[in-house]
View 1 (cartoon, rainbow, N blue to C red):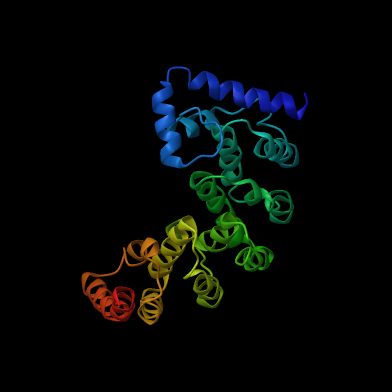
View 2 (tube, rainbow, N blue to C red):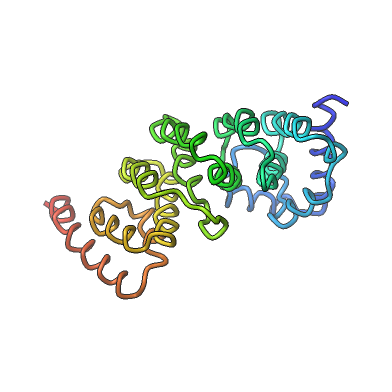
Length: 257
């Protein structure tokens, strides 16, 4: 079978699974996801359930399966098909050959077109980063200044994704130098990534993350702020909010002048 045949199998399965989803509901979910490609309307649990069923090529070697999923990711006609590829990547725990998997998938962020796809890829990359940080970190540094906002988001969210999922975490010297340049980023989803990463940094390094937030409290974008302080204690939140209010007063006064 050709890669086109495998893509057809994936797309056909998903289309069948979504047959009873009203077009209005699918459109509603697409709007929520901000997807910039056709979406069938399958929920995340439904997508995961379809992936767990396996496909005709699911018992092939790592090399064979990854080649198929790379083709699916790059040629998918629906959002759900891209997510199936990302779910496969995230299922590789432990990864047999990080170098090989990374060589195939490091270009995937180039064709991300919504936050759901971004998050699934970040989750997979975070496992790869945990396994071989020296391989992925140079790419994260490059993505950090890329013109593509999804790559900038990947450069930080992939550091932890969710810290609780990992046994090993990157040192602060690899985290904060990537977060700091993005504090003033104008992209909404990059800012959501900044807040996410600061929250997860706090989960691992609470004292250091609090110090960073206090130091840059006036620079943290409103779209990132709530997530950044989400896990802090009530006392810490009160301290941060009070300082932020004081720091931002001059900016408000200037805008009102």
